[in-house]
Length: 419
Ligand code: 7TS
Image 1: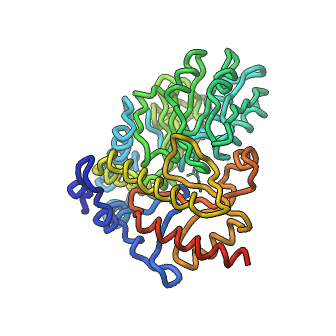
Image 2 (image 1 turned 180 degrees about the horizontal axis):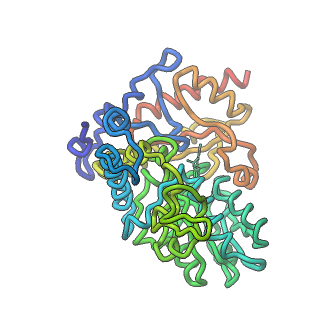
Image 3 (image 1 turned 90 degrees about the vertical axis):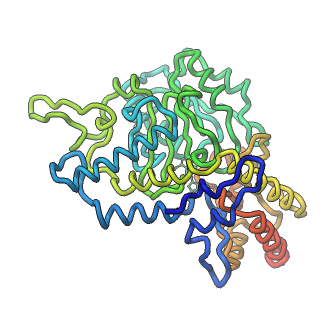
């Protein structure tokens, strides 16, 4: 197995990106006859060999259902799945594995909190507060539970740079506020929110705070104990892991009092037609056979990532963002959408006379994978007066040379599209 940590230099020295890239087989692919430049990492990240191999080893050597078999294979699979849960606990710095619930992704994690916590607690007059920056996954589940309970959804405003207007946001927080649901990092613009501050504001009125960490997982430092959030959600596939697996962290005392969301196998202790007794945490929230290979693969992904030097990862991504921003600003007619002072490695933009989708298509002809459109964040697009953007989103395995190639290609494409 590749141990990136051994080749990952100390803080302040060069980040050895070329060696790290060797861990990601897909990065040496060609697309349309050109070397792939993958900068759609906010949609999903690529997977290192150690993750791919762990998943295939699981299917080749350990595949069995978990938590129920007395046979050795089932015990091995259970151990591997539960070891992955412990890996997630460590990654988030949660107190206990009871607080780590495997879900299919961020979306399911947020829906779980909306349908279990919010639906059972909220009533007419209560409020849920989100921000105008949110991904649809952190909007629609709350709209649904508002319809079900009569609670009201409030939306904290942002400025033209895509930053939460903190004073106004704070003024929305009252004794009626029962839940605040906030993105750690905006997928559409890259804004990094001051979640610790927002969590403090929420707790001052006894609201619970959920953080949508889908875009933070392998870009920001996460410590649920330090920030003291009540819930934290993220997706495996955006964190070097497989699709179809994600995590909901929740404080044990909250999870304990929440009703189960889905019923079925594994989430029960005993079932009878008279009375069914639910299982203990975290199994109470994991009905049915989980994504066992996905969980084990996510464990391998977080283990890979933890071997990297997070400070070096973050400063490398900052360097990528700085160069991309500099190159973008040098293009006449290009405007960056989202100019927060604290930004993750995402750059969204529009170019006068160029439709983002046409740009995306022509970049694809050059092997460059970007995302275009509304990025499942239509309200923030509307707020900033655009219908969509072209979005380049980086991960630690992207290089400064790739940024140069992307912007050289954009410069060549513009006159073609403007005719
Ligand atoms: N929250 C945020 C902030 C996201 O960026 C996404 C996915 C989700 C929630 C949903 O995650 P899922 O894994 O459950 O689908 N964001 C994107 C994106 O920016 N491009 O494709 C998916």
